[in-house]
Each structure stands twice: as structure tokens, then as C-alpha cells.
Image (cartoon, rainbow over all chains, first blue to last red; front, side, top):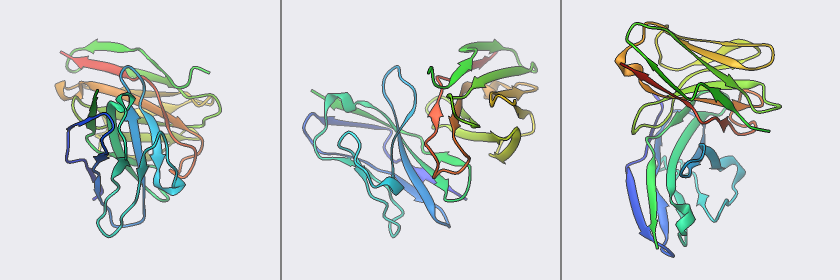
Length: 109
Length: 115
């Protein structure tokens, strides 16, 4: 069975502090991993995906197959980063996405 | 481009009734996926439509059915509504079916409440 776990429902950090949102997955194949974000009063939108190996809004995420993790990191949190973050997994050749339960990030000024 | 549009925004039904939710994909997209998001949970995949056919289905009963039209818009139908069907129903569109394709674009959702 495929499963995505985000252990923290709520996370608060001070502005300028590093932030890490955890995501672990269980999957027996070659997954594709994503981070989606939902800002207040906005739609769910893609933040980044591991195959792109890109940095979006200062966020990065490394796929660690040994630890089956895909943690989202940013060295210096900004107030505008406050949002709900979802980790998601998809088969490399499939059409089905599995989302975690989400982590609500609050950046304290 | 308004992106993905869903209607209605809110809906109240009673147990046993049937409901139809609608979705228009982002311009240029040909694939529509539906998700159910219960309060405090992440979106759960219901099914995906491409070329007017259901291509993949999540762990949802047959009471949940869908349709895709030639213009790529889609409907989600739920029969014999249960209290547990109360949720936000999200539609997402993309170009092509695989995750390596362009990312999914989500709509604002339809909030369904069952009394």
C-alpha cells in the first residue's frame, strides 16, 4: 500500500529561522514526490517536485530513498510562507496521487 | 484564463439523495481528477478521467461515478448520500495523465454538506 505521512499537523517558527516540514512515504516502487501549498484563501497549488530538482520561493526538498523521506526545507522562513503544506506521492507511470494530511506552517513575525 | 472552475461552490443535501458536481478544466488541459477532502485531512483521490474514460480509481465505492465530456469538462456523481460524504470535493486538471506531465491545477472545490 502507498502511504504518505506528515507527522506534524502544526508547526510554528520565527521569521528568519530555518524551517523543515517532514514527509515520509511507504511505497514499493519508484515514486514521484511533490509538495503542494495552500495559502490563505487560495487554491491548492504545486510548490515543487523532486524530478525538477528546483528551488521555489527558497524551498528545496531532497528525496531520500534510504529513509523514504522527502522533507521540505527553507533556511530563512518568511511571514508569507505561512500556509498549509501537503506532501504528495504518485507512481512514476501512474495516474493516482496520494496526499498526506498536511502541515500548517505559521511564521511568527 | 480562470483556471479550473467548479460548480456549485456549496451544496446541502440529505441522506439518501443524489448529487452532481461539475468541473471545467484549465484551458488546454485534457485530464480531470477528482478528490475528496474531509475536514483536517489531505485530498483523497477518487478517480481520473482522460479521453472520456475513467483511467484510474481510488478506494471509493461504486456510489461515486463520473463522466467526462468531449470538451474535457467533467461531472462527479454521488448516489445514496451518507453523512460521511460531507467534504470538500476538489477537481484538478492537467495535460496528460502521468505525474511527469504538467502539474495538476486545482479548483476551489465544492463544499458538500449532508444533513
